[in-house]
Length: 440
Image 1 (spheres, rainbow, N blue to C red):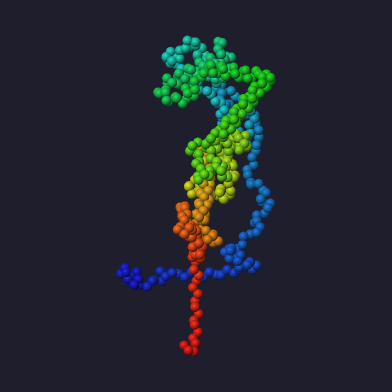
Image 2: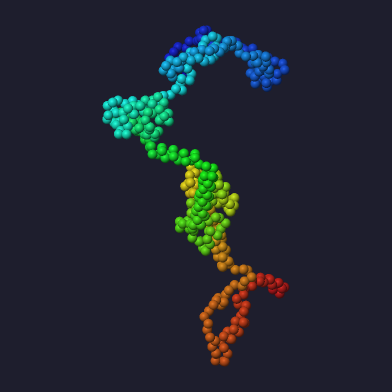
């Protein structure tokens, strides 16, 4: 049964057009002479790659053909959009193929202007009146600020009345801040503006200039004296920091870290370093080379502190500590090595060292106890066994019998006669069979 039987189609033979045309056999390619069979199989019969370049070396050094450009420098006029007077100037310009460059002056983009706020008469009457400033002075100030781009040194020189630079700055920034606040819908809209966020402080600016002037007017002797003072202050701070570190290192450990002796043996008597306070351990175990650097990687410091803490332990103990950390799911090196994390990591390593030491001491004590117990119940082979009469008995005084002999002496004689009673019986000897006689 085939597909036609399932579909109910008549079985008709394929026409000649439907028959698959037989492909013509491929002509076998002959392996060229001088090429091994393996190389010919790898190349797929398409031929070998050329060993030498097909382009001549002289062609590689030639420059690509390009249109010849005629370059000339010409003295041409130009104008700048940064100027409002349409001044025409001249400069040398690179002209290619007789076509001069077009567009704005290339340095006009660097002309940046300050946006100085303008105010109306109504705004001035409502928000900007100041008894120390007149309307004419305020108008002149804003005109000069726009003209000289807030260069207040130049503005103070051009200002008609005698005003200090701090007064000019204070008046300009106060007016600008008031205009921004009253023109905004809400204070949040302008709270991020630098003129509103950072108000100008004339007193601070005056003090800053005075301190700068005093610093620049110092003599060589004053500079040398200031340098000596700073060096002495630095030395005092370093000595205080060193004494503080020594005091912290000498502090006793807390009650949480105190260890209770087990069976009369303290874990602190082992070869491992004792536990101390975490902060004390972190401060005291930092190498002096790192303290001198002041700035160092905390992971590098942690590695050195771990090595210092495990210096007295053997390599096998260190591997056991690392294996314990892995069993607990703790990374051998903290992923986020902050100061608190490093302190806790060192404390955990010290606790694991102490635990391993206690386990070792416990095993030793258990071995000693088992050895003593076996020696108390088993005796050496050369020692005779104790009989019931050798057991300690209460003292009984000797009594005199009727015959005048002491009972104890008589018992002693009996005991001497039976001294072989306690001895183990000899093995029974097998009797030889009696020889039969002729009469029997």
